[in-house]
Structures are given as C-alpha cells and as structure tokens.
Length: 336
Image 1 (cartoon, helix red, strand yellow):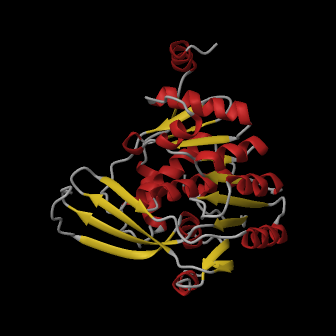
Image 2: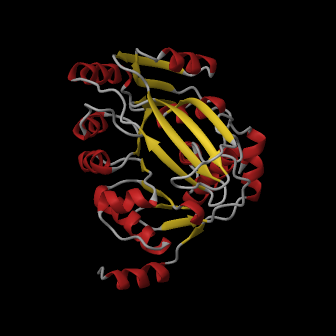
C-alpha cells in the first residue's frame, strides 16, 4: 500500500477552511478525581483547530494546501507564526477578538479525552462576505474544499450550505448538526465524516452496533447522494459506506500518547487514498494507518512517513460487511 501515500506525479489542489482557530491546552492525568486534587503529568499548549490540524499534517506529507478563513487580531500573531514555521500557505481575514482557548484532559487509566471548548470571538456579515469573496477567487473544478470543525459565533449554518453548494470541485465535510445537514441537502458531498455520536445526534438515528451504523451511513449516501460516509467508532475502529455497501476496519494496537488530531489524520489518509483511485478498503486502511501513527505521537508531534508505512504494513484488514449481515440488520430495523 505504500504507493497510495503521496505517489509521484500527483499534485492535487486543496483548500482548507480555518473557521474557528484556537489554542489547545492538553493535560494528562493518571486518573481524574472529580471535585478533588489532580496532579498533571503532561501539559502541552499549541495552536490548533481542525482546519489547522489538517493543513499542517498535509504539508508534513509534502502536499501544498492553502488555508483560508479567519484570524483574530488580539492574539492571531501566534497563529500566523505557527503556520509560517510549518510552511503552510495561508490567506486569512483579520477579525477583532482573540483566539479561543480549549482544554483537553486525557485520563490515562480510561484512555478517554474530555474537552472543554470555548465558543470564541464572533464574526460579522462583513467578515462572512469577505470570506465568500475570497473563496470565489480559488473556486475551480480541480480543487478540493475541506470544511471542518466548529463554526464561530455569528456564522449561521446556512452560510456553510451556501459555500458548499457553490463550490465547483470535490468537497469534504467534517461537520455536525445543522451545518452538515443543510450542506448535504443543498449538494452532494464527496466525503462526510461524523463520529458515532455526531451521526446519531445530527440525523436522529440509533446506531448501537457497527452493522446498524453501516446501514445508517449507507442511507445517508443514498438519500443525499454523498459519495462516501465515514464514521469513526473509537476503540471499535471505523467504517466507510457508499450507496452500494460498507467496509469496516478494527482499530490497530497502538501506544497512545495523544488523541489530539487522530480524526483529522484519518481524514487525510482517506483523501490521499481517494486521490490515487484506491478502493474503499484501501482508502480506509490508509486512513487508519495515518491516524494510528498520529496517536503514537505527542500532541504537537507529527508522524514520519516511516511510521505511517509501518502501520500500513501491519494494519488490520478492512472487511466488507456482507449482504446477508446487512439484510438481517435491515429486517431488525424494520426497513424494507
């Protein structure tokens, strides 16, 4: 599978939206005592946000993404300095305010991450129009647009639906709630990537096992003509669905150092597989390999190509869910 990661003679164009950047402060504790004293083992503080995470890792993998969106003048110099250090091209709109601060608390005993995320500074109609105009300058059929993360205060979900509808090329939506629902109602997306909770809460479905999850993901592909619906399942791995079927992959064994950016890393691997025309099984295995390699890094570190290749060689096999399994589950759910 090594030929699927950054092959020669492939130079795709990709634009990533940076809507609600932040400063992440990550704490790690052996066991969290609610209401008590907790001694922190590890503390990391870094510039983050889903758009930034995706752009930086893509650049690390020798792609050349362009980050477009907002920066906040009160503290935004740390963001542009970080992007320049990572050699990520950016074309950002200055907005009054400060970068929001998010707290990530990782409990080593349970291997769970608890997040406390601020809303951040608001944007206005003037800033939304400026973003719309800026995107129009880059709107080409051969350019992929990635829209992910939370929306800043002042940006209605209808705005996301509008820019998604107007985009001429492939679109990737790693969103939740009304922003995701309205966007795919306006136009079919190439990828959507909810986690299990986001799938259930956004579309009001009960996906209490991987087969039911696969069926609901397939229904989204059929109803909204989404090409690929990817659902991350935590310790149970991930699956990718089309309107024809679904493929599941187990989570590989990893030495967890940080869960920050794992979902973004999986998305990057999937996009890389898509660019080279991989089958769904190969796309999913590549995505899981990039995610696993990222999980074995501290929060600010990025996996090497060799780390990713190692997981690619030892990654669990992505397996299609059979028609019999899916038909049996459909009967239990009462679908005809």
